[in-house]
Length: 543
Image (cartoon, rainbow, N blue to C red; front, side, top):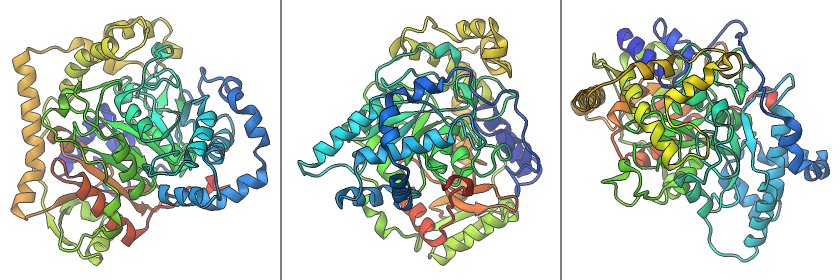
């Protein structure tokens, strides 16, 4: 099993996983993210985000937003889920405009250039207060609305939105002004407010190789609120997770190729869902791999995750991965009040039973009525995993520039490599080893198809053999330990807070099941969440 974890972790480190998991899980599955000493970074703050410009659109409104009103709202909004927020709106205790001001106030207080700064937000929607007032007016007309209506949503900055350039954290894309991605269109149709863009591991962590997760040239170094400069943020959806964990946004959208939602969600005591590939459109999202990429929701609670997932769904006929999908479910949240794991059978990997938090999570599931079967994991390898990403990105990034990109002047990975070399200190302080690897790789169409087929079969084998042998509904993992297998198998996964290790680092219980099992995952996760209640806000960010 340790051989498997080492293999997987290497893939995750290269393919938008988290560096600390790569280092620790090869030796000890108990302490994947804890660091006894402060982490050192080459670069901390952004050279490109100008605070005066960032806050100029909100200066007057924030100045009029009194501290005592903020304190009143804080009592009911910190850690509140979407249904609780909407109930306050319904009762006239809160307006959507005040809700936005509350989060803008917290971003200004905690996110940049102070002793608690997290560097999680790259840009803000300059029109969001006007849009929030429009939601308040629309509410007066009555009628049924999606639960996401009026809720601020933060987007990972590889997701196109007309509110600001989509940079993927790269200096090269500072002027990548685009139309909304398909999932953003869906969010807006359902009434969501786009709050802004979140920092990320640059190019979704498929760029520099030997660099910390959460770093981008545009956004600087994102930091973990549970241990600032101590615990790794996880990646690549680092800012999306950190902002929600610290209550700088109620919910956010991340993207995953192999671990990029599961990793930062689990390492920031959050719920993160990696859907079945093709359930959500990838149109208008800066790619790594058209084979493996998917967006997904990052939230503090399972019900919020289900609401946000529902608000993004819709069949995008321009995304090849959506072929064969029926019309997506529009409501993953209504039945969660009755969520149960009674009679469900989950598989616990024996080697992970060394982890005390995992053991406790297994017992929580049993207390909730589930049957848990321990099993020895399959000895399966993932050959040519990195080559799959190299070959996909070489083809998929030019396609993004052609179909969805703005007027950047770039059309290939080669163009970007040359651009970064012109000012390596500013544009690539940790190098661009993975981009250079893309340029050096090639394969025939037959070889490429064989690589994908082998990976898919091996990923399925890892889950299917124990699931069939023990009649399992899902396999239980930790954080993003087995995200690589889930990625190539194209199986959905959800991670839910399962507590904190001895050093205080968060960890997540991860459930993985067969394709199109999102409703089941959300139901099981909700039942576990209700039984365990392990989510805690970071102490230094509750004022």
